[in-house]
Structures are given as structure tokens and as C-alpha cells.
Length: 153
Image 1: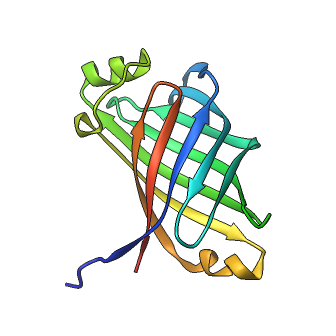
Image 2: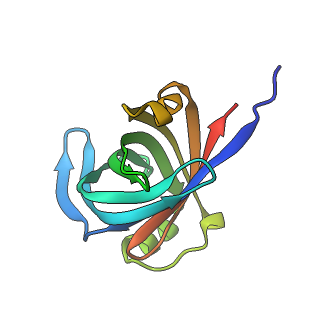
């Protein structure tokens, strides 16, 4: 088997508006988490997360895990727009989930938050993003979430 290698792509901090509780649906408990902005910074690209086009359509499943479906619009420091989408999973004990839902600060070692980002870029300088696979490790905070995003080599 070939071992996976990675390279840091960037770190990002996503600022969040209060959660909108859609409630129980046939798929599970649905929550909408609108994005109010944020920043990302790395060796090859940095910039801001625009508030106009971002949200997490979160699904709390019957097993208690949370399934993410996120869309973000990134604007690089040189003014290129990049669409970032990702799916992910957050899982924890019911006690930790309740603490996170109350907005408490919980050490990330107490839960699992992983995502698989993909990118769409039209600027030639960032076209390489269209052809990579990335993974991210996240930490949920009171009003934001941070991620370390890695390119899989």
C-alpha cells in the first residue's frame, strides 16, 4: 500500500451567524449555519471568506453524528474568486455534542471533525486547485470554526 502524504494548503477561520433550526425532517434534524465571513492563510494562497455565499446545511443523523454540506466563496488577496465546497462529519459523545450545541469551548481531542474540500477556480493562477484532493481537520468554537486544510499529494 502507498502511504498518503499531505502538504499544508491553508488554515481558515469561518465566522458564523447564529444557527437556524429547521428541525426534524425525513432525513434527520436539519440546521442551517450561515457564514458571516472569515479568513484563510497559507503559503500558496490567502484571503477572505465572503459572507454573501456561505452556509453549512448541517444534518444531525439518527446516530448523533453531524453531516456537513458547506459552500464558501473565497476571495484571494489578489482578488480571485474561488468556490470551496466540502462535506464532512462531526462525531462525539452525546455529552460533548450537548456542550458544543450550548456554545461551550470543547477541546478538539474530545470530538472528530473532518472534511473533504473541493475547489472551483477560474483564475489561471489558481487552476491547480481544480485538480487536487484535500482534507481538513476542524475545531468548533463558540462563534466560529477553524480548519487546517491539507492537499493530498
